[in-house]
Each structure stands twice: as structure tokens, then as C-alpha cells.
Image (cartoon, rainbow, N blue to C red; front, top):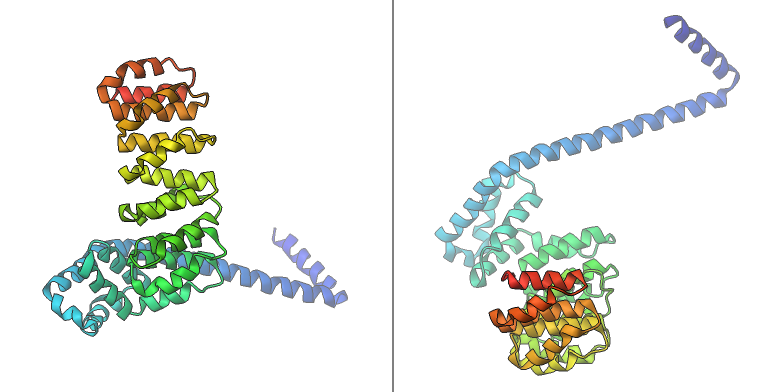
Length: 343
């Protein structure tokens, strides 16, 4: 083995002696290999460091949260001057933990409070410089940096972020824009409804769950605006989301509007209208919903079964028994859950 290595060395030496260019190329390749190996080693070191950091952080996380909460209750009046709190944060654990870790715990802790108490933690968040960092990060060229910043602003629920969030609802990336809309929907301020709904209607409906979250955050008090928008929009998909929200919020004054949509030519709109009326438990719509049990589209029949079960209760068992013989499994499944009290 050693003799073979010696022969290869002699061959390469002779080759490089005759071809200096080959030596240069080999040197470049060697340097590149050293750089690649160094980078891989650095990545591996960072991963290991993060792993141990997470383990250590889990052990310290609850203690840090207790320090925040205990200090708050012991010195609630001092929070009127946040400058008294910032030194405590830095003295207690700011030196040992990363800013990102402290920020996460502070946000999680503030989410346990509401009203004035939440504002106390929001002010502390701002005094520690985290709000400025988040606002700066929302202007990053990279969407995967903008998105976490927007989510943190949503959790913080601070009115200081409104101007920037209103700009972000027109962000080039759909998910960032939707996150900004959801953050704004949690705040109460004038003229927010129209801006959010207009921006929402222009976005590709890729995330139904986010759409529903945004609409639900607008709340019962804004249901009139949702109703108005329902009849102003031309997109059946967006209309179906508005209808679902009205049903989830149990907006009884939407009953007459929804009755007119049961016979919609769009099956999705018709199905969601039936579902919403069932959630409202609209006695006025019962006869019309029963008629939809013969609808040619299985999805509409399935929603009609659920709505009948919600409105009639046990007195609708005869209709549910008939629905158990439906040729489509979705209708039979709805009837089964209804008879078992699953709705």
C-alpha cells in the first residue's frame, strides 16, 4: 500500500513538473475543499450549539417567566416608568440568554394578560428595543424574515405598529400580507374593516384557515360590515367565507339575507348558507332547508342534514334515518354524526 502511494506521488510530481497549470488548478481545488469543509464544520457547530441552547433554555424558561410575572405583580405601579424594568431584565438574565429567547418569553407572557396589563408588557417590549427591531425586520427583502416579524407584532397587539401593518397588507408575498391583515383585525381603530376586506378579496384564496381567522377577528360588532361586503363582492369563494363567519358568530340579523342565498346557483354559497342558518338555529329557514335534502349536489345535502339536526334536535330523527340511505357517503356520514349528537 505504501509503495503504491509512493508511485502515485512520483507520478503527480512528474505531471506537475511538466504541467504547471495542473498544479495551479490542484491548488485552487484544495483551497475550495478547505473552505467547504470549514463551512460544513461551522454549520455543524451552530446546530450543536442551538441544540444545547434549547435544552438549557427549556430549563430556564419557566424561571424567567416567573421573574417577569412576579416582578410585575410586586411593582405594578413602577411599570408606569419602564426605565426601572429594563435594568432588571439585563441584570437578571440578559447577559446569559440571547435577545431572541428573552423576546419570545416576553411575548408569551404578555399573551396571558389583557387590557392595561397587556399594555404594560407591550411597553416593556418597546423599551427593550424589540419593537424597533421587528419594524425594521418587516422591511427586509426576504419574506421569511418579514413574516416572523409580522407574527410577533400580531402577538404584541400594539397600536404603534398599525401604519406599518397597513402597508404590509399589500405585501408581494401572500402569506405576509395575510398575516398583516390578521394582526390588524385584532386591533380596534376606525376604517379598518373596509381596508382589510378589500385587501383580502385581492389575495389568492390559498389559506382558508387564515381567511376565516381574519374575518372572525373582526367580530360580532362588525358583522354589519361583513354583511355589506358579502353582497358587494363578486367572488363566490370570498362570499362563502363571509357566510361561514356569520354562522360561526351566530349573527341572527343575517338570517333573512342567508335565506335568499340558499337557492344560489353556486353550490358552495348555497352549502355555506345552509350551514350558517343551522348554526344560528333558524326556525324560519327549516322548511326551505328540508327541501334541500333532495338537492342534486351531495355537499349541499350533507350541510342540509347537519342544519336539520341542529334546528330540530331529536324531532328530526326520521329525516336523519332517511338520510342514512343516501347514495353519497358524505350525506350518510353527516346523518350518522347527527344521530349520535355530534353536532
